[in-house]
Image 1 (cartoon, rainbow, N blue to C red):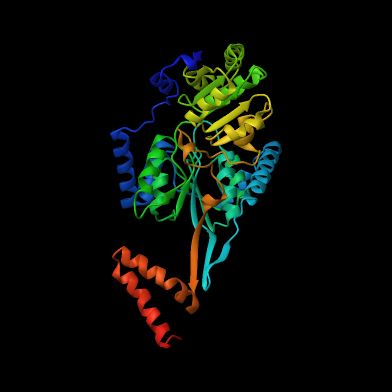
Image 2: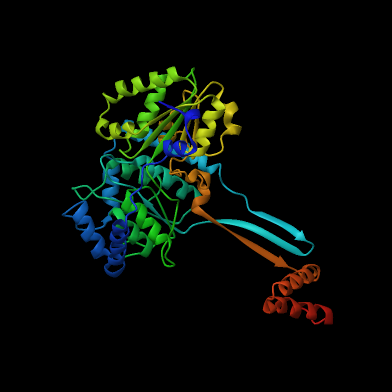
Length: 435
């Protein structure tokens, strides 16, 4: 247990330090080489990498529509119903985010507009690993569907049968995703960003992944011919704020639900009650013994932080300093503290709001900024799948009214051509030759 008020400034910083992300020069170079190979060789390079890392017998990068339908049909009724429920809630929440165009007169004769339009082509990356992630398909596919993105493609590593998990196929079909490609890792990111013979180039890439995927996303986003990305990514994390009224079993379960993502996941409890902290630590050990992914969760929990604050206000200040991906607030009258909470990717209020709800089916998006980026990035939403642009239209009256200000500003900045573009128009208006 760490007593926050007894720490120096440097000790506080160390207590909230995150696991170091892989960012070695070797990683950068390896990813750069993969991108270069995909750019030069297209499908051939992607197939080579996929055969090396995922499926040695893979014959095609394209998962046929027939196979998507056959796989989707294998999903059990219970899981299909759960996916349907999650889909409906996520769709409802993201439909409520539809922006409205703006049109107004800023000066008499000067009309300005702000309009929104969907991105044309989006690439959705779904990681492989030890468990299928249909929830991530929904979190990316539903807002792309609601936004009206015309071309949605999905890349995910194949299994040894040259197929994907039925749950992923079912979720993809629900989201109207017809283009599914069997590849993962940095090679999939490169393929979507640059395009290959089979995989179309996209405008923006979404989705989580390992250090190679994260590095590839960063690299392609910095290329003029690459693709935009959703947000920076790091290991998953949760911070729980709890007081003496919190249920220690609930708190422990919430910490473990994050820890099972990976050994580099971070779980932090901040409370003003030492008895609650001790009870939670004991509950963690009891629950950990029964988890199927205990080997993954245990290393993460060995690096967990249990912080004792002098008050709830101090606990909230600790949370704001850390800026967690997930913030669970298990304190009495939790909603009343919302105005004091400044930074978090997503907030879960009260004892009946586990992180699992947001991860799967409440309706909010589980793609969230990690590693402190919630201070300046937002959770994924509908607008991430759209772009906005402006329109301005000046009438002759508008030019007469605004022209002098434009010319004065252009002259002040020494941009003669800018000034001349207005001077010529003003002269035509003054000599009566304007049409």
